[in-house]
Image 1 (spheres, rainbow, N blue to C red):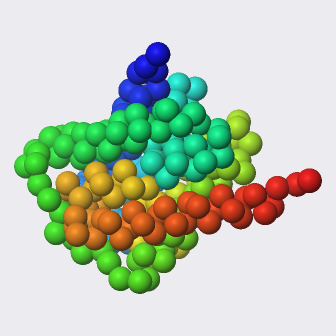
Image 2 (tube, one colour; image 1 turned 90 degrees about the horizontal axis):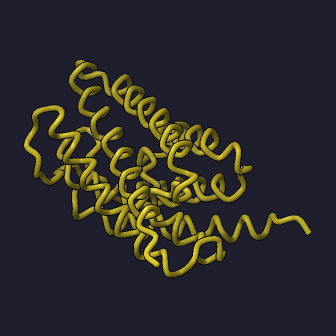
Length: 214
């Protein structure tokens, strides 16, 4: 049986999340008059609020991963059946691209574009490993009834304490490479981000296992 509702929820949720991230970045850049701190704060708040709402509304359908590393770790922990993994990832990647395009359409920008924003270097990669590791730690350690608020709070904080502004999500990196705006990332820089994110997620899984009570 194809559990299409799960995949559709992941597609819609990831699209909405990327639309919030990119759209709020565009709006913030237009209104902040060059003040990057204000622009980042606006971008952060929109992302936090959207993430909380999306986890609350779509969590009962798919688990609200919106992130291939989350899906990967849950498969490795046997919390998600292996046969769902490919469907989740494909849905997340398609959703991420759609979210970028919807944001562009709302702001009357060219729909199809590539980012030229360079985000690279050891510090950025390390930041992505830390950001993703922290995210997975929160996901795995959160009580089920508090996951939405704890994840949203963590991402909001990580926007500010990581050098990369906490993508923490291969689907987010994928979607943001289609947007030459405030939230974009050059396609050439995405693979290293993804590798760092996977490493961070796997390390978080090890840390959680080490802290597991007897």
